[in-house]
Image 1 (cartoon, rainbow, N blue to C red):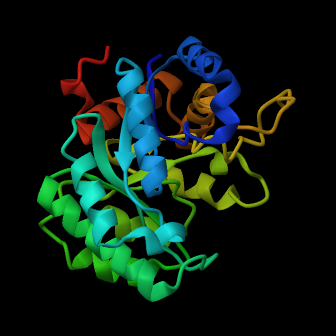
Image 2: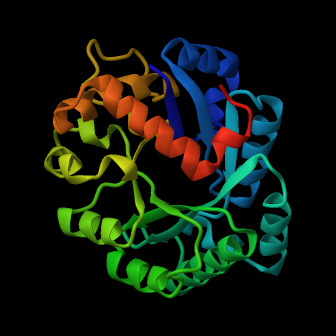
Length: 267
């Protein structure tokens, strides 16, 4: 079984002390490639550094999460454009809207999102999207770019069936994380994932966040990491009533095509 983790925050400080071991455990669990999420200017630079140091295993995104929307200045956009000229950067993002936490003013979030969508049009790369409690504004802004974006994935989908169907109707991909395994918050996802077409499904850990709660025995440390992608795909396959190999194979194929990884020389 070969897996691709489309969203791993491997630049997080919690990985600094055992980074090589994290990669080794991922490979042992069948993870052949990971896309390191860039969610701020500094985080995007770090994601690029990791991808350049481990080109056989890692690619990166570059973007500004809505929590950091105030970073999207003229200088910030110039830096993002420079990053997206590099082949290791395979998508624009993580970008979008987050009205749940509102760590940045909503006008600033919308400005940052729009400018990054425009960047995606300019560079021709897909977008790696974040949306929480902002669906209507999010879709209104995305519709302004209908027909101009390369491809789009709604990363770490946690929303409703209605939202999922709207994304699918717009031809977006859906990223599923260990949220699926959370009996407190993610039970509704188990009813939604069977309706996601195989050619629009991808999987991710969002590590070090969202450690799957259904792992037995529970890991001693609460940090998530890419090796647990195998557990997520097993749970996902069960809910979709598919063989694990089928779910793994289609999600890996989708990730290769979405991020252009089949052209990067990964296995």
